Length: 456
Image (cartoon, rainbow, N blue to C red; front, side, top):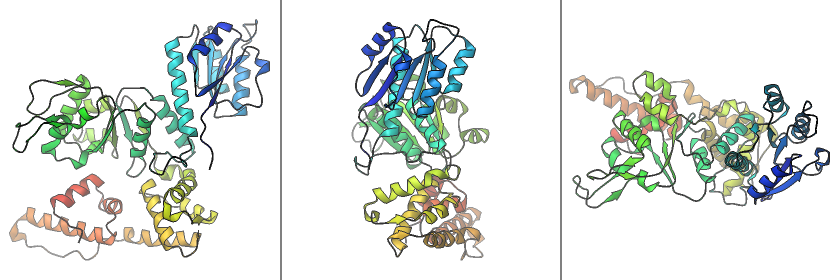
């Protein structure tokens, strides 16, 4: 277990004393500032989390020595966040900075507002990348993995720090959308976070749940009720499975996003709230737009900032870290370890259920493996058993129905039996059942409720 980093090293290389004075007035803890006027005196024994480098560090303006300095810093530590600076906006030089390893270029004279924003986003990235979650309790959110895709996601999260525009998260079921939403929220200062699954609210209650109602506005409204949007005032409202939101309510959500105002059901006056809306979808919304299932104007309003989470099969190098994370955070399994050959076997699987499926498999392996060490043979046996039902068809379905009851009744009876049989075959695993039946989790939950399918 490593120690949490509480101080981050910031390097400023510039031959202008005024630039150093600007940084000294803006930079505070947890930054530790290294102000260097002579680039030849940059400490070689310090790992810098970020560096701001001027391009023209000598009197010879035709030789932008800063490009060489950037390249040297990037080679020393590729994770250093490097920002180039110059008052000479030569395109060739600016592009050379990016090639050398800089992530951004700031034009001089420096804008204090832009500099402050840049520092905040870099700090957010450093904190989210270096945070030690082992000593903070197992319930805190963490993005696990260091693959190129994971690093890109962490960078995107940091860039959205302080942004108030809506954010759209896209990814397959089980890929980590809820984790990402929680991380987006956690990097902000203390403020409300309200999360709701769009598929769990009946269409008839959507407006009341989201915007609230006043006493007597409808039968059963015995008191005033604050809606979810109002409860999130000053913070973040996370709408998961946005693809399940009825079309009738999508227009009302769009109106709220554009005006920032809500009106409780039965109320005369509107209320203005400040909320950042984060939404997640496990279906490609552009495809739903083509089918008339999702509003195009709402999609464009939501997707001004978008993060796409790749499926686990496209970032398999994250699997070892995820496995060790699950073993460390699940208390009963801390005495278990996984041999390298078992990790290789886990990486060879396609993981249609993504990270959520991997977690369940690790839980099963810890329960079924006879030794303290999970072996490749244990993994192979479990994955083979798991794959068997998906190859065939659902067994034990009745061959006929009484059509005298009507087609609709017969179809409902068939649908109910098929879902019950699939649930039994997959041991009530909702993700596996939904994937087998080729429906979304939210759709399956709705059918289970509508068809009155019980656990038994």
